[in-house]
Amino acid sequence: MEWTSQQPNFTNQALPKHFSFRFWLAAGVAGVAAGVAAGLLMKLLRLVQHLAWAYQSGDFLSAVEHSSARHRVLLLSLAGGLTAGGLWLARRFWPKPGWGLSSGIWLHAGALPLLASLYNGVLSVILVSLGAALGRESAPKEAGAAFAASLADLGRLTLPERQLLAACGAGAGMAAVYNVPFGGALFALEVLLGSLALPAVLPALVVSFIATWVSWLLLPQAPTFVVPVAAVTTGMLVWSVLFGLLAGVVSVGYVRLIGRARRAKPTGPARLWLPLVVFAGLGLAAIEFPELLGNGRNVVQQAIDSRLSVLLFAGLLLLRPLATAACLRTGAPGGLFTPTLTFGALLGGLAGRGWAIVWPAAVPSSSLGAYAVVGAGAILASATQAPLSSILLMLELGTHVDKLLMPLLIATAVATHVSRRLEARSIYAVAGPPSEGTPTPAPQGDDWHAAITS
Image 1 (spheres, rainbow, N blue to C red):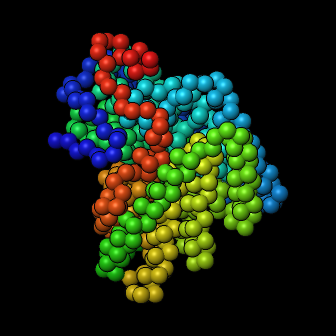
Image 2: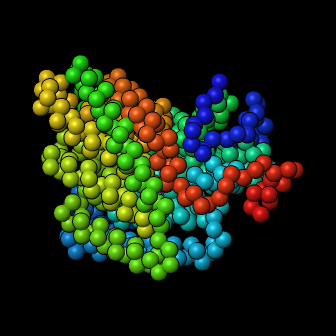
Image 3: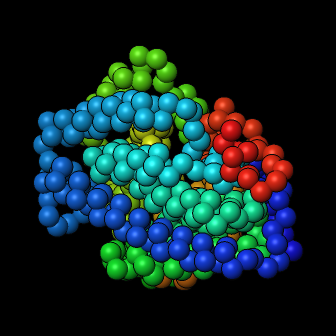
C-alpha cells in the first residue's frame, strides 16, 4: 500500500521490507542528533532574542511592542547586514554551488553538506531572532537531515535508505522544536519523502520520537498554542465547507507568491544592498505593525484569543505574506511552517468574523478563536499539499484542538482538493530552486556517494 505525490518529492527507489541493522543504528543516532541540534538551536534563538530585544520574560511580540521605533529599524537593518554578509561568507567557504534541504532529498538521493547546513541553520536562527518574518523550523530541519545524511555516509546505506533517513532526520528536527512527534514523522513522509509506503512509517516514527524525547532535556514540553474549548455548531460545519473553497483558492496565490520570491534571489551587487533595503523597510513597517516581525507564533495566539481587531486582521492578512516573501527575496534562509499557519489563522479568523454577521448563532463569542484554528489547518494543508500531516500537526500543536476535528477535517479536505486542481505543487516544491540540479540517477557499484557528488 503506497501513495506518492505529484510533486518532485517522491522516491522511485523501492524501499526494502526489512531494513539492515546499520540502518536502524543510524536512525537511532540520527534521532538523538536531531533532538540535540533542535534544542541547542532554539536555545540560541531565545538567547539572541532576549539580548537583541532586551527582555527576560514574556513573549517576543510584547518585547517588540515595548521597543522604540529606532530600535526596531536598527535591529532589522542589522538583520539585513547579517543576511548580506552571511551569504557572502557562505559563498566564500563553499564556492561550489550546493543544494538545500528539499532538493537534497528529492534530487540528490538525500546528500546534504553537514557544515554548510549547520552554518545555514545558525544564520537562519539569528535572523528570525532579530525579527525576520520567517519560520524557525528551517534550522533544525536542515540540521536533522544533514546529520542523518552524514550517518548514512558512515553506514554506507543504500540510496533508498539514505533518502528515507534524510527525510526522517528533517521531520525529527521539526518534531523536536514543536513537540509534535507524530506530526513530524508524518511530515517527513507526506511532504519531504512524498510517499506513505508502509515500510517507511516505522523509521519515521522512531527517529521523530527519539528526537522529541531528547529535546525535552533542553526545551519546554508545553503545547505551542492554547486553544479554548469551543462548541461545534451546524453553522460552523457549513462555514467549513465554504471556507475550504476560499482557502484552496487563496493558498494557491500564497504558494505562487512564495515561489516567485524564492526563485528571484538577488545576484551580483544586489546581493549586498537588497537585504539592507528590504530589512530596513521591514523595520519601518514594524513601527506601525510590530506583528510583522518574527515567525508569527504570537500573532496566531492572538487570533485564537480574538485579540485582534477586524482592521488589524485585514491589514496583517495582506502584510504578513508580503513580509515573508520580501525576506525570502533577499536570499535569507528561513522556514515557512509558522508563517503559513499565521496566514491561515488570520484568514480563518477574519472569515469567522464575517460569518458571525451572516449567521450569528454559529459564532458565539467563545468560539471565535476556533475559526482561526480551522483556518490555520486548512491553509497549511492546501499550501503543503499534505492534509494528513497538517491535521495531525494541528492536533499536537494546540490544546483542545481535538474538539474541532470535524470542521478541521472538512475545511482541510475541501481546501486541499481545490488547491490541487489549480496548483499541483506545494509551497516547498515551488520554493525550491529549480536550477539546483536534476534527479540523480542511481549509481552503479557501492561507492554511490562519490557518484552523486562528482
